[in-house]
Image (cartoon, rainbow, N blue to C red; front, side):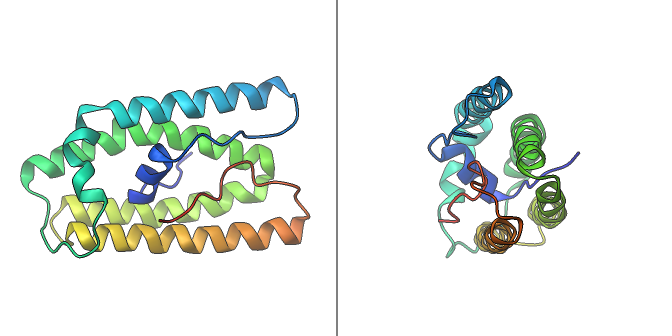
Length: 161
């Protein structure tokens, strides 16, 4: 399954680890451990280190260079996708309907990455679009939490920064 993969996932990578559940279920503990390890690998990756300065500013009108496009494509595929799979499993375990929300956001996020790496949008546009996708997803998650009477979203509703 696919999951949410825009710049905001990079923010997930940088976010503090959030326990998936307050209960003692070993599956949740495993998912927390996997999520934290995946985030650490992504933030330590050479691609992230090379690109991280672009992930911070919305006023930037520069488009990705061919080298940056290659780095972003590799970062997305090799580091973010594995983390997305873990987040998707957390979403599904929290409530199966949440996985559908994440997959819908993934389609938008993947399109955002594709537009960046094909030079259609700037880094600033990419960051703004990613934040908008995250804000929209957070709103949907909040509404689902209320409608489904969920005690927790298990760390899925990270800040859009």
